[in-house]
Length: 143
Image (tube, rainbow, N blue to C red; front, side, top):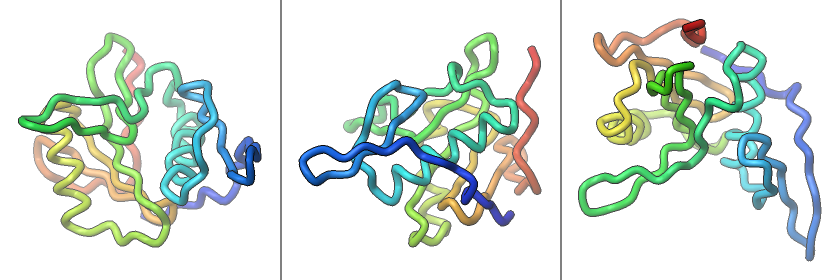
């Protein structure tokens, strides 16, 4: 699906010639990169769709055999189960099979029922049990 994140208004700061963007989920400034802009804009988008920011984990380390991995965003339901894993890419990156494999690799540990891939322009969502592409984000579970 086509995604429009242009209404996102980031909180920016400049320090020593470097531009930073405020991450509301982690309450800190991060170096502004193209991927970070997409991640922060998508967090804002998720909130607009009823996903609570306090139930999002951003770039949390997960144990993967012989290395550490960091999914961009994992949204949990209200009882603490993973609900949606999101892989963010810069706007210049095509959402291709390797991107999906990357998200599925992370999800082999997380075990969320849904994964999403975004580059800030497109959004691809998959229901994992059936591997079915979805036309829109699943509604956030109320319980």
